[in-house]
Length: 65
Length: 372
Image 1 (cartoon, rainbow over the protein chains, first blue to last red):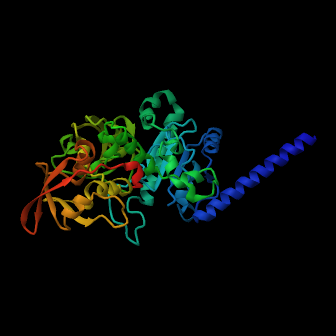
Image 2: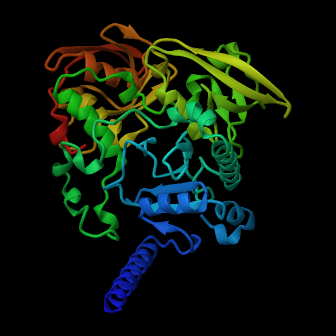
Image 3: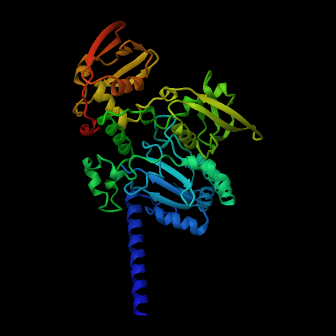
């Protein structure tokens, strides 16, 4: 039970950090108009999500000068 | 992408898993290959990494205005590309084996370096050191055009041949004699007279559905097909819808040297600096020859000073070592690839209505230390 709680805690912390990172990136790029469901930076997560949902993947590259 | 303001766009995007990437560090260049001089591009693909198409191009080259922040793209064109990508996805999911052959060429050949940070000159770029510092540090990015430039520099320093495909990369469809609508996937708006497209019977208003057996989501896909065509040329089979009904096959033939009809000097971050390095001036194509528009700026440390001193603003270069009718790209490619460093270059120039003969020494540049 204790191990399970630790695993859940680590996962929550990880996802929290990920969201914070995405939000910081959105802020720095002034990307407030992009739809909320976009994945930031993590192409592997995109592949996994596309396989899971059966949807096609759209990967947008933006050069930041 | 203002998807929240546009329900139609939002509905289309909702059918995709969307990823936004601003850091090229760690991106697999074996999968993600597109014109390295774009500031924005999109890949449509499957979760198994099969590429359906691309969106984003810099052709035609048009000047930006305040009201038109990106003259090469329209929301209508993006929606058309998204809709086409969904169709390609549906076909692929239905029968992957049948679609595999036409989609396989949408992934390019293995690049010299699989990751931008693995390029030999990567250490020379100060910002590369920051690649792993923070995923949110947008100043830590390596620019795509730097990877392309490194490939040229690397071959130059090793005295290897620099093929046309590295100079005239991602050619404009003007080499076919075609112009395309920005509002459609690949609808032809003009066919130049006496062009390869005209000879193949393509017409204004035709919808180009596939080229070289590859389905087309956008102009970027047409350019991708051209980019993959050998320098020696070849025949491209075009599948066209005319008047919305008829499907027509046309063979578009491109002869050896076909890439050289295009201009590469607009790719300023690579070839603009190369222009100053080899010629000491900024050049523009002109109906009469090659026009000198400016001298290289003073902040550029190592221009060809000999040529810079001898050429004047407004000069029209009529011939280079006896060769007439060259474009500025032909001229730069000649100095870079064919003319030995330290040898004399003879120019015939029109200056103030008179023909003047000039000579300068081809420099011995060390591109990798130029910081160009």
